Length: 349
Ligand code: 2P0
Image 1: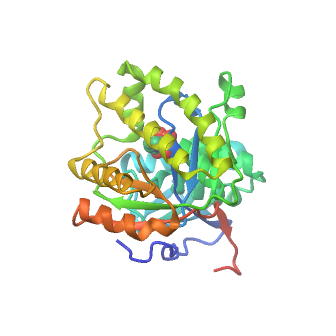
Image 2: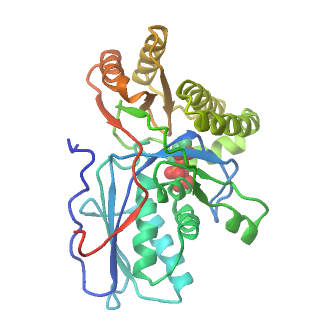
Image 3: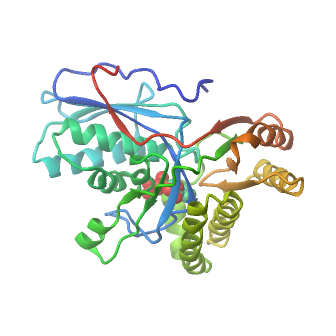
């Protein structure tokens, strides 16, 4: 694992000459979670979600059109992508070709600075970077809203990484084209709210069940899913008000209960999906101890055992020490709010 988590990954290989673009995007962590799709083809979520884009773990992706190639070339961290990972990128390139009316295959080179598929939002930064670089390479002239809608087709959480700071992804209304048009992300401007997110890397191996499979199973079999989706609406309204007040305790409390509720829906799925490990629970105990000592610290977990602890920036070092003590051997990275996806200009390289 790289030690400078803010550094952009090594420049992708030069690839072949032709239309090309490079984009950098950061992952985001949802405070109100997206879990479950009402349209899997168009990637339309059941619920609205709200996240903070991070300033660590960027993904850098280059897309170059290669008219001479017979098929798309996809490399992930320097190795050819295979199976599901390759198929998702190729499907996304098909969408770009359909939208642009072009037919050239592409060479895609993606560098992640975070382990892929470990519940650390690599698909959010990955598809945000791919959408931005791919749209530029195929000559699509899209505004940020349209880019977030496009990124959603790769991974719904990627729509939010198009923006820096806090962003909301709308689940949208209706079906088909109406749903596609109304499901996009937009920024939630809270310039004065600048907390720390202490990320506890409990396990950086790829997860046993992909979030896509897990959310499908949850929607189809968990008797708790509807109840969580309903309560999530109220959580979102309360969280937005808390963000506007800059009330970290309220933001943290709502985010923590929303995440635990999401995991409860998975535990009730048949068969159960359990991403939380003993080390996750040890960190959660550490967070409770911090709170009983008067420190504002609140946990959230995604599709994996890793824990992200929201706290005041001034408390970040104390929180990091406490979680290290609770789960010895885990690495800990402290993040803050980070920038939206951006194209790398030639001059900026
Ligand atoms: C989120 N997660 O809101 C939620 C919370 C994980 C738990 O979005 O199928 O990789 O590509 O849309 O976005 C992880 O799922 O799933 C995720 P797809 P994604 O951040």
